[in-house]
Image (cartoon, rainbow, N blue to C red; front, side, top):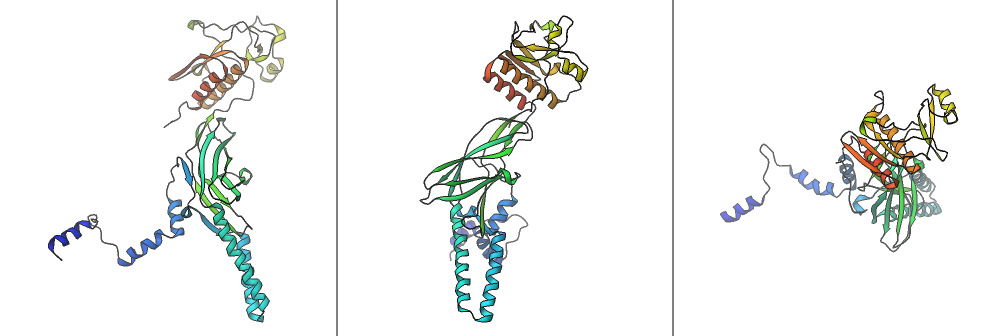
Length: 356
């Protein structure tokens, strides 16, 4: 070999880090085998942080794992006992039955794997919810093969068995399923790892795969349960709100004033809280309200304030009045209707939350 050829070969070799020693020959020979091992792939996948996957997720063969179920283990033990008995007593029919059942078990494993492999999952949409409610993440499952898929189950990482969704997917069709996830706090709820599994056809083997579609739901603050007083206008700001007590639909409660009619006093609320309140109806003269974060009582924490303002926003939108929202660092101008309600609830949901 010439000097130039030896130099080229040396250049083609990967450079070692300073202080590193070359891997032994047996390790270099073993690495390709490990990389083709399903157990290695599964451990490597589960040990690293899985980022959300955008677009369509295809369950390739290297992403589908399979293990026997409890019924499968009991079935295998039974076959072993039958085989031992057939050998001990030299039973020809025992051999036939044992190997026939063993063949059925092997075929069931292949069908379980075939029932899940090459499915394509695409995240679609999810509606906003309030805290402590169930968010439904819609996922389309496409069967691109020429045979039907049966008993496909989907569930979240920490969801109870009652929240497992089961569906059948005809050949060449797309089936939409909604995966339920409980929203525990306001802000963005990122869809965590979803398990897709099947035990078709006879439950002896469980084939499963993990997916994490890039989907998230907006979670609004949970509104207060009780009826709350409406914010009072500030005289020094030029904002006037006439809280006249009409006779139409009930709107809410406000602080009692000496000029209020006794017929509009909320006596039940006063007996319960020992604070006189006045009922307010939607048939008042003016219907412009500002909900200001800074005007709420100082003894309320941030989440309690946001919950109360969410309640006010819902009541105001339901009554058809114009309302605005003031938060530290942001403001929603006066408006009405469902669009205004959604804008205000979004601001409340993302207040103080990193939206990156």
